[in-house]
Image (cartoon, each protein chain N blue to C red):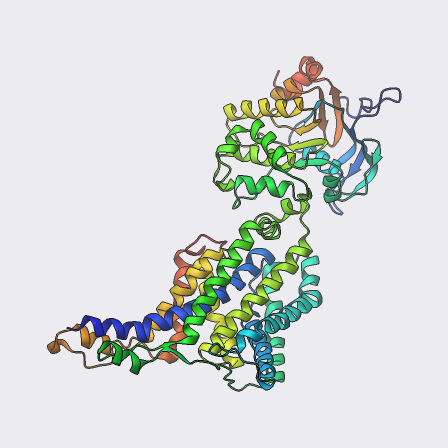
Length: 336
Length: 250
């Protein structure tokens, strides 16, 4: 029995990665949930909005690096983030002007907008590949670790190492700041309140003199910012590949739906539910079990419930279970 | 039944009413005409009530006054200004307050936020108006931090009326404010509406509970099939044997 080593192994392979991944999913799901709550459709192009925003950030990062500007121990991408957000905002606003506004004026049913957003998704998909190519891009620079495994072992004398990457810390800190800012905006500013009012009751918002086009504009800008931040954090933590971002759509949607579409708090909770399930179910628990169980019971297999290749199945199954038993999600959002 | 038999409310010699929809004809979209030359008016400082059987076009008449359907003929005049072509939002800016029958609050927002949203067009200090509304509806002050959707039916109606009052409207229009609330709450709501009226705001109201509504009304309109069947003071209509027999159950 070695509880301490078991805990360290658990933290190193499950808790820390899941918290970081959960934060990224939460930011992505917040974007999805805002579009659903305010613009009233499921935006299938969100994964590719994340990809586009991240791509813009990467290009700006390269520009800064070429100019010799870095952030020292922090990734240069943080400095390039505003440029990425601007790029994403321009793209979604142009899309809204050219595509969504037409359907809004027609008062198109949400299901039509879903299909429209799928078309938009394919366009974004192509645009991103056209500019930066389909390959992996690694754009993280600066200090790699806050604590690396060897230092941790030497420091504590434990057999297990604990690595804490700077991108993981950065992810969580940034996510907390962004979420705090978003909630402050939604509950304390006139514009934020008008967005909530519009989401609650469109007709009454109109009667109260709230300008719907302005609400839509601000929503898209916030969604672009959230998508870019989520994408950049994910890219720093792992790496940037357009196809991976397209695939992120599933866990991001699962997170938004599990939490309750339209509920910002739910999106955050959903992000962590999905992340912990995905990491927990695909992790080989052998190491942790070996530390915890007496030697005679030591497991022979890997104790891995499913291979990492099947991680998308986790989001999918959770999604199906939630839709079957609690279609409005954990935080009572709107039913799908 | 003397359909369309009454005179229009404004006779040339009397001063023009504050808000009047004159000889309104129209319906929703390209559908059939629901209103057939119906006239509704509210005088300054008075309560006007529209009553009538189901499907008579009571709510439609009110929506027409508020610009929610296009009129084929007739016109709407507010304080001497023709507003027939204005959108509902523009009419709110002109000083008309409207409380829809359903979906008339922001359920996930707090009571106070509901009131703030009512005053969205105003850029000045809202506190005095909010105090006035809390004075009219004391229960809202106690519940001001609670989500409006969690309140009881009667309290929600108070939030809805309060929201409309936040723009400091020069006329308040209520579409069946007592729909779906218990008789006790209904009495209380009527009392509150009288209080609002005492602050000097003319009120136009559509009501299912014809007898009670006519009791507090200065002017009553009985609509039948989209036209004015009877018009008079509330007391006159209550005393009119024909109105009693047809609409008030004897």
